[in-house]
Length: 84
Image (tube, rainbow, N blue to C red; front, side, top):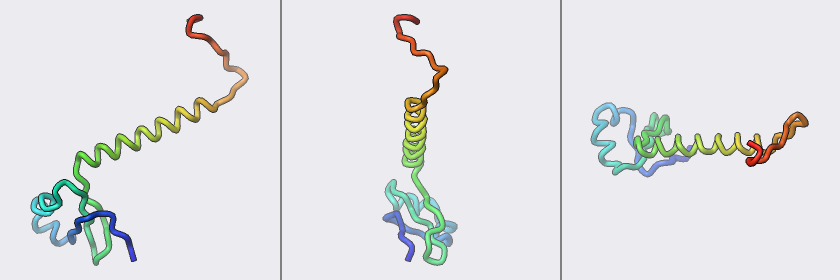
């Protein structure tokens, strides 16, 4: 059985008939769009989507910072801020 990761669901047919009412009835929460009772897509509010993208971007930035902090190269020259 497939897990549905939303409190609200709608079939593709329902979504075609009345997308605005489905979005309105979800009260700002995500909606699982079902095809033959299986989730085929999630309809996510724009604010939630933007926050998700921000979190993902920050995660990749943190990974890049960690990678660069761990980078060791004999050609690197350490310089203090005072020397700049």
